[in-house]
Length: 174
Ligand SMILES: [Zn+2]
Image 1 (spheres, protein in one colour):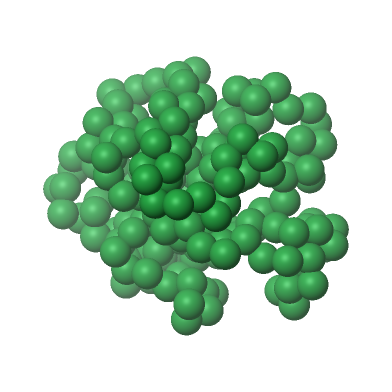
Image 2: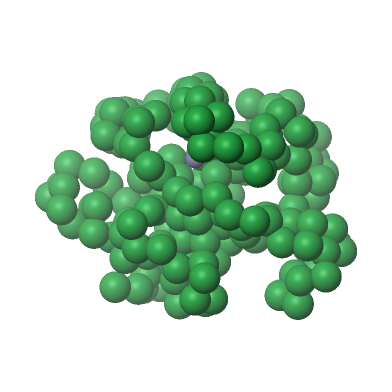
């Protein structure tokens, strides 16, 4: 199941809101996201190794010479958020009307951006061993919850409860 145009638009809008909320939380200036380079791909554009239907997203770190680095990435290392359309749509469908796509995408977007900021700042190590990764996921979930506070809503609360710190949101790979 691939995202249709309406889901792609929802993803784009989720990352725009997530940049604003996460940037505000970390006190970013106007060029904050240029110093934390990343791109976002949905399933239709993913390479084979970027696909994983058991998580909502996968995060990769690529070197400056990566052939797919767009102009925004300015010749530096960058992170790629690989959105797993099928897993996300499945979670929304399974929940009936309980979990909505808009708050779920916003949660995923902020969660991924928090990881990226922490990796870029050296507050978290991309190659951390598994036990540390569990503790890091708890921290990222808590920061995500704080960053989302300005837009709190019952629908977002449901997402935060369902996909809490012990839920596997994504895989992280070099
Ligand atoms: Zn995570």
